[in-house]
Image 1 (cartoon, helix red, strand yellow):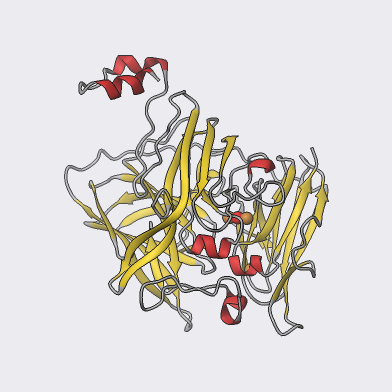
Image 2 (cartoon, helix red, strand yellow):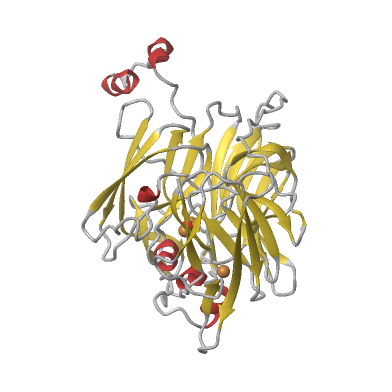
Length: 456
Ligand code: C2O
Ligand code: CU
């Protein structure tokens, strides 16, 4: 608080000694402009988000009207430390009701932005969300009503929660990888409220790639030998995007629920909707590129440069960055089992996406005991992939088709392949009523959503 006051009243640099009664300022996260912290207290971050309409220049044909938080899409970076209180005042200036869901945050269910645990924020109204940030990591926020429309129109933003000891990297970058469906005029294509045809079957596929809400390639510079942290989020409505890094040595150091016990390599890395990965990227060549790979129908990928860094300047002293792992529960014998069968019912001539034979029905929650070793077995029966997302909890991916999955770490989203089977392990630490759904937003709208009710 002292520090903030000093910084405003004079032009002189604040002497370092003044800061000894509070934590140092947060480091810079490159890629998305942060929201201003309006509460000077240590340990509290308060931001104001206004959901409204704005215009962006994505294509030459003309401007695109988007829905945005504080006039930017993706919305402002919310940046805090683990254990901090985050308070977000949402004001809705749209003509539709909205909410904010905090994707991946293990917070109380009455702040989770989901109906019926809370009411949507009506046009012209405000609501204040407030909760403690229990986990460090890379997270996402977005509406949870008419999500297929509201997220595609631009309402989504990012959250970075710092570890108690932040790994010392040369840069921390956040990349939101998205696709959007535009008409020739540049306007966002409609059809959100009557999901039919390919959109009903596959979900809505975009025709324009966006990196941090921009078309084209983002650029920056890196010093030779730099060690950077790149946070990747797949935020398309339906499409699983893939990513690869060229000109660097790189590996996965974190995933949905924070830093991993041991880094691993995967190339390309799959980013289904809602999934995050943190990469360690060490510059090797003259240019370091983040490529987005889009699968084509003949089983290959088309590659797009999302980001290009020119490597120049004074080399960085070679060093090893330590990545402090998030605490991981040991996978033990499960004491309860949840079976979820993902399928489609087309008997009416239209797609209805189902879990255990039924489309979502409000209030029909699966009762489960909290704080108990739990196995979630998901079986896919329709032949199509589904990024399954669970609110309020983390899980570990134990097996895929009966084989050890080799995907370490805590997750809140897992891609369940068509006709595949995955087994998850969780201890359901967070009591409450939680949504469990496919993150292909059109599948969720068409029924592929259920609730679990976790006891105290
Ligand atoms: Cu990303 Cu139910 O949400
Ligand atoms: Cu699905």
